[in-house]
Length: 380
Image (cartoon, rainbow, N blue to C red; front, side):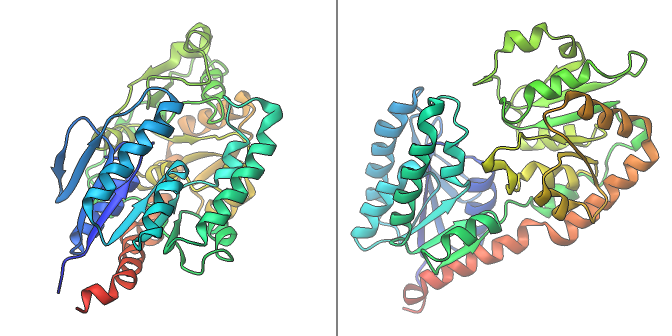
């Protein structure tokens, strides 16, 4: 049996992105595929049997959407792969050209792109609806030509199935091994009186509201918000946050690797995911929700109907108005002053995650799709 070659392409994400590298590519390599990632990385490398072809990361969006996309395409042509799997809407032209050349091409749709456009702070507000409409039309027209589509949520899959019958859902759940590494978790009584937020820090992901909420906590309650993520606050002034009284209760760790991230979650008492109610968030399934659950800590989450349906029956979450710092503060105060109940919420969340929300089931779906697309090759 020949060993099929798969190439993953990204111009936006790091080559070591959690979904692209840690989940999808490592799983495919373990299943016997020869896997290469073309994407931003300091140097060419090999990690966990996955080959990385380094592409220079550009600082401006325009340069990324032109020079970086060209570099990705140029490198992709050299690979002579059996399957090309790309992860960014700006690479749709690359995917179409490869498909026109007879290649099998998968488009991995991480977000609802047209809805995401509606929330782009760098686009003039008056232009967003028109751009979103154009983006939806162009993306939809292209998706019918690809060999398969991989989506992350049922809502996105429902949108694309009429356009491409080979549409599958591969959720962004954590590895159970990552969770197993926390079995020696810090006992609840020894944990810091802290809550955590892990991820990109933007206005739409409520960085202001989280910081402002800390100022509403009682003065006699020792509490800290621990942030782990990028050092660049794209659409928020870091000076504004530093000036706010709530920042006195913030510890910013900067960008952490996955081991350090899970270690942090192992030491706090709750995780925050209080996204603003914009169209692209309402039916999203952020991986941090499942990472918090896996770490055995309560989730303080935006009160979205979809999230209530997903988590409400588990009893692991407190739902709040994400636009109200005082409501966020009250939820933080509750988990910190009710340690027994908070610990039990965390246990329920971890049990549900290990039972229903692990990457192993999703890896099976991805490998099944690849096996279907490479069936003639594998049987040769």
